[in-house]
Length: 177
Image (cartoon, rainbow, N blue to C red; front, side, top):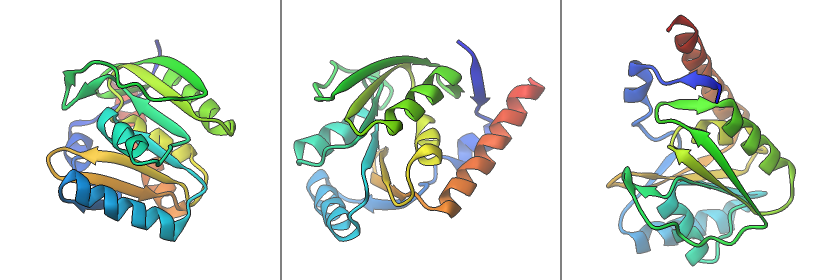
């Protein structure tokens, strides 16, 4: 397993802030707002990162092109959530890092026009960055913001550039370790 990026202490703090629009509220409130945004924006596809977010989207007839899960909620192991997909992929990705294996899996998943579920052995949180970087422009990436709601990121050139800067800092940090 080769590590491409390692989280820095500074970025750990920064990434606790939402990368996109935070939709606050109860599950019912957030899903209603999210559905309304998706109906208005009509993104080419949606990517979900996280077990609960993926489950909530699918349960409300929003079917992400790519679902990235780790069979954990709030860092506690859960029974795997049955999420239908055309292709299932398993990758290794330790906490606080991003592996080359996970990057390739996301890139390959987004090349196909089918639904892919990537199950991560480790932690999926940082893979949000890779999903944003490699997603088509105007696609949406959704992930949970613990105890607050759901974050929706519209993929734009500016958002891709922001993510690229974060990844560059992580790459430089890994090289100095």
